[in-house]
Amino acid sequence: MLGEFEVIALSDGSTALHLDELLSQPDVVKAEYAAAQEAQPVNLSINAYVIKTKTHIVLIDTGAGELLGRESGKLVANLQAAGLSPERIDTILITHIHVDHSGGLAVKGVPQFPNASVYVGRGDVDLFVTREDNSDEAPNQQTIMRQARATVGPYINQKKVKYLEADGEVVPGITSRRQPGHTPGHTAYLVESEGHRMLVWGDVIHGAEVQFAHPEITIQYDVDRQRAAEQRLREFQFAVDDGLVVASAHISFPGLGHVRRIGAGYQWYPLPYSSSVNELDPN
Image (cartoon, rainbow, N blue to C red; front, side, top):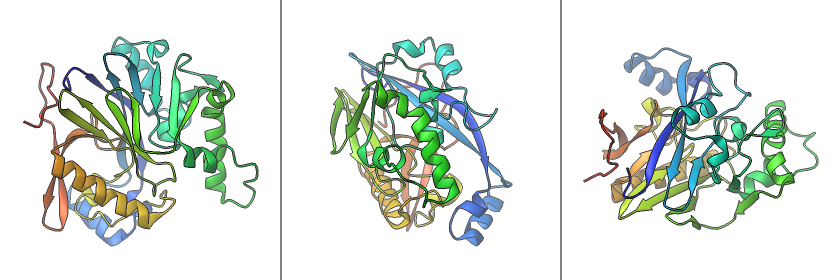
């Protein structure tokens, strides 16, 4: 519980990535993962979150759907296991348009959340969905655009997409925070109820074992690496200064914890597990 809101962490599964090849400063990356006794490829969780407010049932990100193979695409099954059907989701907040965040919106062109309005940064739609000519793009960028059109496109066609162009309240108790860099429309969401706050920050971080201690290290998927690194520092310090609970897409499920400043870097502290309902309260 976060004040009066209920938070449900949902696993879409995982994806295996060679972060020693994808993250900048490969020597540092290899050393940090070796110190953590982790071999490459690294299994990254794909996490999403339901927020049950007094007026809405909100899903933040949708997982990968059918687009990343057998180890992912489990979000709808886990949503149902949590006692919710896709039809009950009335609001979807997309942190950004990449396959593991927006890929679960539609499967084989069929929207999976028929009653939901979808909120997404305008910059991502402009870059990945509505551009008419992408023939000059690299093959991987063309793939991202093709996937985006297949998953976000059906909601645009049904006029169910609402564009985030400025920070502000999306639904009562949830505000958007623009953080362009990883993608142009990359957006975090601050959830607040009765003075308790949680930040859902999307892809601020991919490799927790590396990027908390070395926030300057970026990933090849960043559209603007310098701005992505700047936004990472901004959100780390925001989480520290305000004592926020953080919900993170790619930290091992459920991806909930706090951030602490350690010297020139930062450190992640997972929320302690409890067999009873957790109160997401830093105090």
